[in-house]
Length: 255
Image (cartoon, rainbow, N blue to C red; front, top):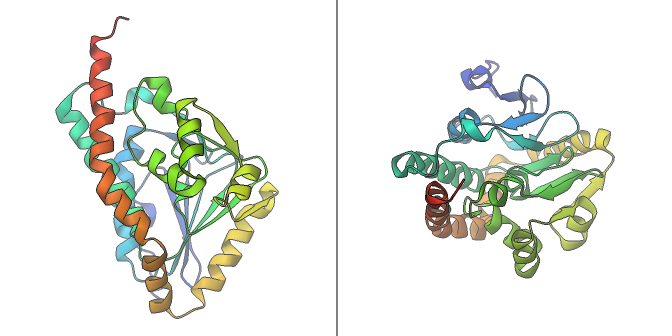
């Protein structure tokens, strides 16, 4: 394990990284130290951050979490690329595809510490190998239907995989939500705990995994995410294209 802090630890405005001597990397989303607001800048930074994480062999297990009392509930719509412009949407698609593919292809176990409501990009935590959620967590998809977009960027695919086809279709079409307790019953969440216990428990599990031989944990991660990796590779381009077409149609709708 290198004793030098990697340069990417301080390279991203909205991501905080800390790593234990055993190789447990905690990746925390934030905005000015508080709960994260998703922005276009974050969308562009995330694929680069995930690339750096994956290339760094000193990272043995990833803990993914948010800040304060929520994982992510706010989004800065105007900061995101204009979906009505094809060349602009192409950039969004490329970034989004790299985010999801790099996340599911990380060659290390991922433990999510969901620190409260996740109404923006809940797929980031739900694709984790182990999901620990606060009792206050509610999963939903606020942005897509609100903005008039198809959820083609990996969130519907993730919901379908982790909560089941019919539930995912119903909740997507009705813009519904599901609690941590429901997610635990459906198998999408491993444990539901009081908020102050979520991150410590996630790190405890991560440390137990980091204690195992690294090749074992790397190959375990590849093994348990084969289906997610394949489905993401097959579906993301089409899903994002459909999202972009729905976005382009917004330019022709009466205001």
